[in-house]
Image (cartoon, rainbow, N blue to C red; front, side, top):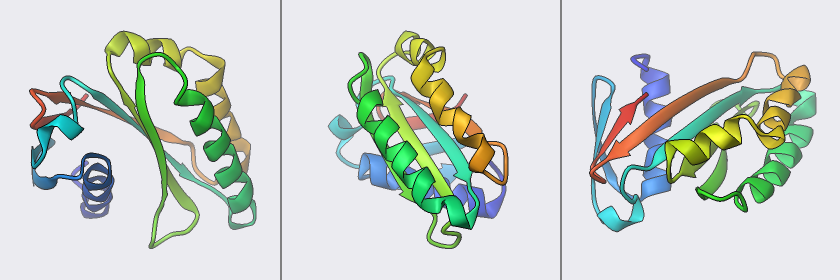
Amino acid sequence: MTQGGTVFVLKIIIKAICNQTICWRNDEITLHGPLEILGKNMIIATVKLKGRGEKRREIIQTISGLGDQVRKIKGCSDVNSYQDINDQDVFYHVEKWQTQKDLDEYLSSKLFAALLGIRTILVEKPTVEFMKTENSTTVEKI
């Protein structure tokens, strides 16, 4: 998380999710803005996918279709996917979960396995990061 590019991308993702001003220090993010948008004790799961250029459309279709299904799962507050503006082959699939239990159930589901299952068309292994909000103002990497 201390690499400049990763920090910048995470700031953009969190800004898009929370619609809040962000202050970043070490592995902690402090958000300033309308707190009701973020909610209390939310867990944010981010999956980074770097695909092959010729498979970009297939990746977009897959994460879009999976996102529509994940939104319907109990405890999922929101799902969004983003494409990196500096590398069009990089995608970030971001999910917001209400509880750790809800997230754990999803992580052991066929839908999550399907998301990671697209690794055959990726050039790098997908990376998954989790952040937990506390008191609606701080996001902590877990």
